[in-house]
Image 1: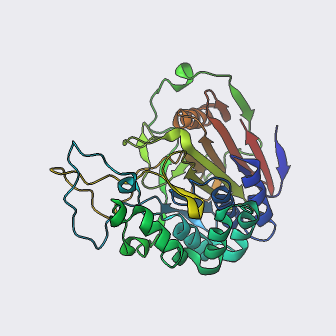
Image 2 (image 1 turned 60 degrees about the vertical axis):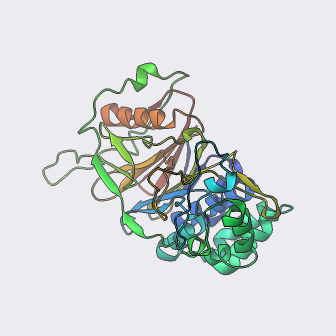
Length: 374
């Protein structure tokens, strides 16, 4: 079913979508997705200390990305001896450095219209009755620095620092400095080869014709302009399409929110809804396991290195501006479902999805937004 209006948001949960819609009324698409991610932090304990990846595109915004993935801890500390194969590795040693609050702050500061307090406010209401409400209030007041200050910083270091067998340091907590980067661009359909996704995927097909919204623009010669695939610059590309990270990543845990505003600026954010990790009860948070423990006799991952995370989302458009935002989430075949949708779009101007993962898409044309839920 399609919903048509001048601006719209879509997300992996109705509460997250409502928070994004609320900010669209007072801000832009970037404000909306940031509010959506904070809403996810309020609803689930494993989000705030995990990764986030943000993709933005529009005539005024350009095509950019912000990398809020978790970092390897240990900045400013000597190399530990490392664990032997016979030793039990404590959970604290698997906890990384959260960059999510800093990445969301950078997004609002550089591309948003609302204040940081405004984008966090819906999340505080959603978190009412949990310790996360106080955490989010502190972040709303102090920004990402709240994680390095008392009392939040003390709790994080007590749970995942050296005394508990972890690697997290005070320098880690003060290290996040996300930057706005240029997004990756690939001509859609130019380098694709059959991936077997359409035949191999299971589940009922979900199709939607978006020909009216996605009519190809003509170039100066009157020919259709090539359509571009826009994604995160750190995304692995196979056969011209986004693919899951090469590392062992729980793709099924990825969630997403996307928005488009009246100015046809698109924004997408992907995060990890971790169901396992180190529980920090006093904060109502769960620190997901993204760090790699130091092992004796093995090369140490450099502190500050980003840890791989799933981000099965993309923008599609021309060299002038995006026309469509897509995200797949909720199952291990999310990248296959996304790739299949992009292949179908490149071949016959339709979005088609098979498999277990959910597919959502936003289009914007002629001052009208269209939403697809599949």
